[in-house]
Length: 105
Image 1 (cartoon, rainbow, N blue to C red):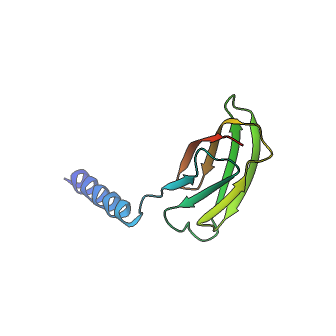
Image 2 (image 1 turned 90 degrees about the vertical axis):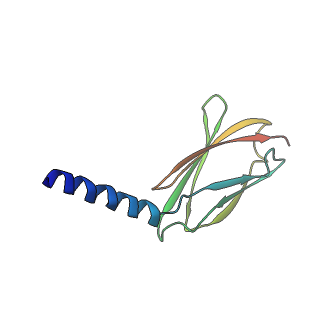
């Protein structure tokens, strides 16, 4: 009986926590791009959270890395790179996004 009560308590606790934490989403535009790429999160990140961003080419070679701190929106230039398909990995404490970017200068 104690086990059943404990299980119900844990299930209810997890459900309440899930409702308190809205799902974070990310928009990346324009895509394809000719120069600038805009990143926009659906909600503010927790204070002090650092977002690590890694840009790789289609073969997996790391091209560029940078970090954002407490930014809902950001932009970066791809003008220094060759035309092609790139992958952008965005890591927060709560989510990891991988987005494909088509760069046509």
